[in-house]
Length: 220
Image (cartoon, rainbow, N blue to C red):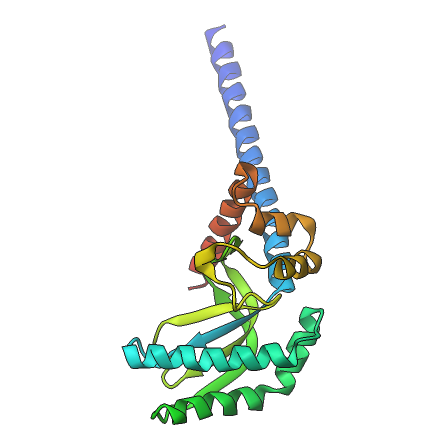
């Protein structure tokens, strides 16, 4: 009798452990699927600018900002009437030589002779806040500009929808930029990046960050 009870007890514990493992796996797979879908939807809606300085010296960092300012001003002028990410990328591709020549001109005018590399691709970005909009870490399409040895600190912003001129210190993103961003992505994703004061939304944002960081570490 005792052996029978022990066997039943062992079987019950075994079944409980199996169910628990399956439940954990289900939750993990569901969370991963959600994060992948959300991350893809957010990254697919945005086009970013990524400028990398030659070094972290004060002179090289200041030069990075001068190059950035001219590139943003030019990009905004040629993309003024664009209403989609694909339009912006198409125009940026058509003007890659212009971006490169403009950057070289700024560099030369400030007494440097660094080479410049300009390309459009899909690059890794950390979590970044623009005023009251927060973007989770992940891979985003971007115009990347590498100055000289490109060993200095990065600078990045969102070129579409246009957030590059957002005054982060004010904590406010212009309504027009928010409207464009809201129109370019699903409602769930827009809520995720704009309603970080909501506890449920904030939890989902942290969940996306957590899984994206795991993916980054696994790839390195």
